[in-house]
View 1 (spheres, each protein chain N blue to C red):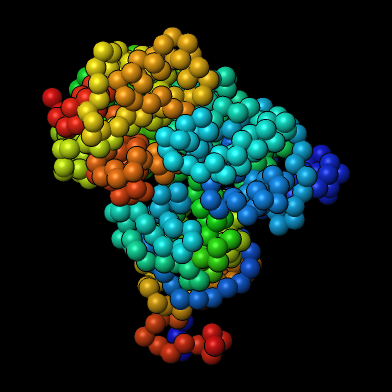
View 2 (cartoon, rainbow over the protein chains, first blue to last red; view 1 turned 90 degrees about the horizontal axis):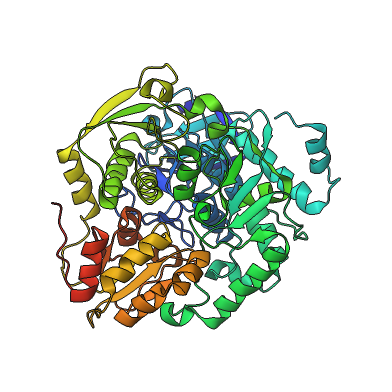
Length: 146
Length: 425
């Protein structure tokens, strides 16, 4: 089966895999997510009402209040955090948010994950090696995922 | 990341468990950023709140549990040491003197009061405001800081010329007891230069105008650094406080220059450090109207239930303005008015009689929190009016209210008549 492979830089180490949750909109923590459910609550966000809980969150970066890290921290405490995070724009908020979520995270990719990954694709993140493997949702799930 | 011997020793536990955990977090955070080293900070603005609902199970185990978990990201409960550098508490969710008005439970108030005494005894200055620069924490130009609160961060960098990124609860917690933060972003001089040139083609004078300019510019530049060219009248701190908060709400502006006025650029050329602007755009009548319409896009009903003033927290001068507009008048029976100022300035306003003037009209003078942070509005509120672009941006999303934005006079009129009659002249 053909896979797409991305290379990038480790933000938070570790290995995780899951279904992709992809948004082209930046995410705000305070006023942007419900930490109890991992649901996007920002009024004009394209994913408003949808949850990233247990998914691989693929997004451009963080925005908004300095409460960003705290609200992702609370999502981890509530068991509603994403399994992994892939983002393009490094900021203090995005870095600290990933660190306290303790989910394997990467940035600085050789190709844009936002244009290659779609909702429902199966994504394996090996942040320690700096590798992301994408299996498009049309195909069967790889055995490794079972 | 390269650590000094002293930093390595701290990471190895030579200065106790809490500092070891703090250094562990700072190293994880610095590596995530791609920072090469840490920098010494001498000024921290953070939150040590224990009153919000998610804090309850931790606060019941004691404040060390709250600090370890939420200020250090440590799974192990460690003893909270004294702060290493000047540290203050920012705005949080509860006005402990006005809980009867906001409807916050006594149990949560007591938790917050316990936290204030506990962290106060560790050296944290309890300013309880989003504007620490108003009440005794004014960093000097070039000072490395670790601040939270987007409106304070943009003020700290741009108006004061001190240096901070938009930190979070955990990184500022770690900075408070180590005096360290990753050397990255706005700590590095070349990252502080302008990126976008804004040709301001109309007079920007009133507080509302500065809010509209900030809201428009933030949306265009997002997290980049705007340089405002064409400002003819020196703005007061009230206006810059409002401008920064607006630009940090519609976008993520953490730094801007007004050449000749803000401290890191005397000219447009200096603001860009000799580089060419990456982008250039104008701000005129049309752009002002766009910002106004965006800020008022959530509102349609003109019957106003609630008027909120003081985001970022009002100066005493602003409280005085409100008190004068209310003098000898009564609020509409259908409308409530809350005016927010820092705790320390509330004392000053009370001394001068402004609190009495506001209360006599039927309003309340409050501190420590705001509707968006505390998620508090009077029961049944559907329509809000505010003179704050930041509050008008966040309230519709967070509390699902319709929110009108206008001048302080428009807002006080709405409180007196119960009707919104604001507009852009």
